Structure formats: C-alpha cells, structure tokens
Image (cartoon, rainbow, N blue to C red):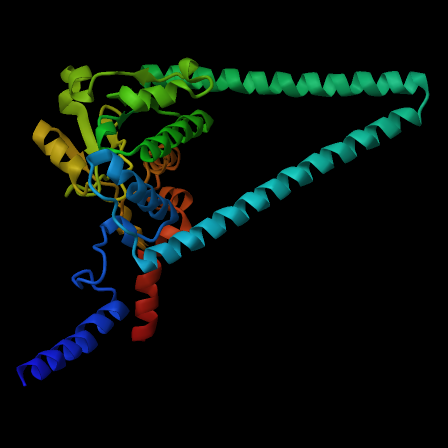
Length: 349
C-alpha cells in the first residue's frame, strides 16, 4: 500500500512540477540547467558573448561549461542565420561595386578609343587635373582638422576616457571599446569646435589594440598610462565623472571642467561601478539630462562614442534636446517628454 502511495506521489510531482517548469523555463527546476544572466540577454552581441563564455569557461576556471538554455540556443541560431545573411549581402554589395567600377572603366576606354589622339590627350590631362584637385582638397581639409585639434589642445573642452577597466572586460568587449574610441576621434575631428581627448589608464590589451590602428601614433590626443587621478592630480577639483547613476543633472558645460567618460563595455554586469569609483576618489559626478527631453526604451547607459558626440553636439548647438535626438538612435528612445505631455493633454480634453 505504501508503495502505491509513493508511486502516486511521484507521478503527481512530475505532472505538476516538471512539465510546467519546462513551459515557464524556471531556473529552479532540477531537470533544467542553471542559466546565467548572459544567456537571457537579447541583443545579438550579448548572445554571442554568452556562447563564447560557455565554451571558454572550462579553460578559464577549470569548471565544466554551462549549457545554454533552449531559448538561448534558438536566439543564437537565429543570430547565426542573420549574420550569414548579412555576410551574403555584404559580398553582394561588394560584387556590385566591383561590377560598377568595371563598367565605368570600360566606358572610359571606349570613349578614349572613339576620339582622336588630340582629344584623347585633352581628356587624359583633364582627368589628371580633376584627380589632383580632389587630392589637394582632401589634404587641405585634413590640415584644417589637425589645426582645429591643436587649437582644442590649447583652449578646448577636455574630455577624458577612463580606460582603467580593462581587467573587467573580455577580449571581444575590449575590441568593441577600441572601435568606439576610434569613432570618438573621427567624430571629434569633423566638428568645427572639437574637444581635446584624453586616454588615461591606457595600458595592457587596450593599448595593444589601439597601437594596431592605422595612424594612431599621429592622433592629436593625450595618452596616459597612469589613471586620471594620478595624471591630473593638480586638477582634481575640476574633474567631473559623467555617470548615469549620479544625482546631479548636468545643466551646462563648464569649459574649465574636465569631463570623464567611463571606458567600459560590460553588458550591464558592473552596474554602478563608475559612480562608486568617483565617490571613492572624492570627485564630482553628473549625468546627462536625458530624462528631461526624451524617454529611453531601456536604461540611460550609452556607448562611449555616443556620450562624447552628445557633448560635442551640445558645444555646437547649445541645445540638449537637439543633441540627444541627433545622436541617440531611434531604437533606444521613445517619443520626447513634451510630445507625451501634449498627447496626455489632448486625451484629457
């Protein structure tokens, strides 16, 4: 009799606990593998990061690799298909450009073949002149950009990228950060009133990857191996760390201040780390007034190049709203606050 009751209880437990938890994907179910936060994150870069970590975890700490959940495997497969389509599309665009260049070359050769030698000489000289003029314009524009950067070095706004977090990032995250820094420098050069960029704590893998960038040794920036708190010890009272966790809202940009942007790509693993660092060092903190002008679809954490471009855009326009809407991608924001208030007033009427 006891055996029958035991079997009845086991069948009841399986029907009421095991099957529902498969449907709800509960992590406490003993029949499912534990899932880390990375396997639950939806962006494709984070899914790929999770896949890398599951295969590398055994070699890093000696522990057995964690198994991806069924939902994460589906997302990973979907991402792989997307990347494959993207590669095919990129190859098709490249082939189309190649065909277009070949068509233009043939047209040029046919044009030369259909004219006399005198006209042919004139066409060749004209083409050489246009090419020389185009190259000259490019060189002049490059020289103007360098001059603007040198002026910014003397009396421009100082923006510091804190690279002292390399030990908290994976190689792929460091690579992403290096690309963001490259975008920062390229965008800064294009502005008529650029800032003076600083890279502090620039050492280790971050420095190695930066050194591999073409022309990096000619960048008009300040490169410091030391942390900013040591390199700018005499400017500590003017340091302002920009972090989304700060309570103070940045109203205007003070040219006498030096604004720090955290160089960290962490997929939200290290929440509040920049705020804790600034508090521990006793320096000022502030956050961009994003909430006053628009609603973010997720958190208010932006990439390094987005934060720096917002500051540059504000220096140019003196308008926070225009700066946010021109830099922050549409996928990261909802309608602006004023439009939402107008819609609520219309509904109330």
